[in-house]
Length: 326
Image (cartoon, rainbow, N blue to C red; front, top):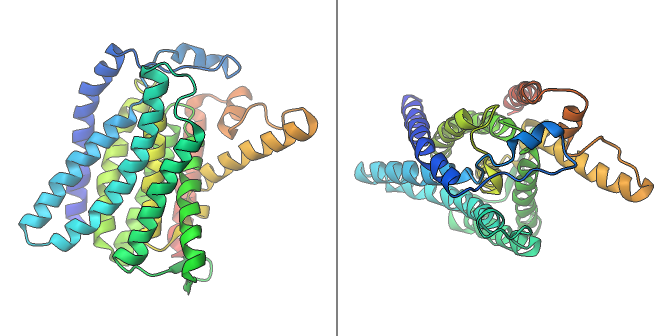
């Protein structure tokens, strides 16, 4: 536990330092946020705020994990070192898909960004590769933990593989939709990652507790720049990275179903969008003032800071519940 605390602090400091270097560069490149005219009017003043800040998390993660990898190899524990890398690759892979999308939109000024079909294909390839690694590479098996009854069930491989892939894609989409106001996605994600890291410690899965501790430090470091009023936004680079990170950890721990509980806020955000679209198609009217749900509360008079605090507290309580269930 002491080692995890140290690397968390190191990752936090690296991210803080990178933020002071990268944010001015993003400003210089004029990689600014583009706000919707039909969104909350308070968001219009955010126009031009540097985005694509998820690159800070990507670089911090590469630096920190590389350092930890070298440390473990040097002390003769190459097994742990090698087990951390696939989680890093999956996480960075998701982040790079988001980076390409952000780069096309903000640097190349292609408003459509990466084609949705290409984006989905990229995420799918990474998801398939990671799931196959878990099942065949380290023979983690197809056991899946059922939180309520606190037992494992063995799924047939032809069910588990598609299920695990859907978990990764759905989690990424949910975290992406949660990113819409200052500090919301990073706050909620930090709590969820902390919960998963705690479970890794309880289960004795050392490589996940190490990777999770690094991730907590990085997300908290980024949050220092992302809290209201945000100095930088994460963009798809950050939100896709966080979705990949959370799902990669959950699948490695064999507890993807726990995400329904501890990540309920992102789940609800996703459901709110689905309800809005279906209701509008059927009636021509909006069910919510705006979707995802956090925008509905904004247009109902809630301040951004209040939404972040309430959603974070709810996530914390749900994570406590999740810990009780394991």
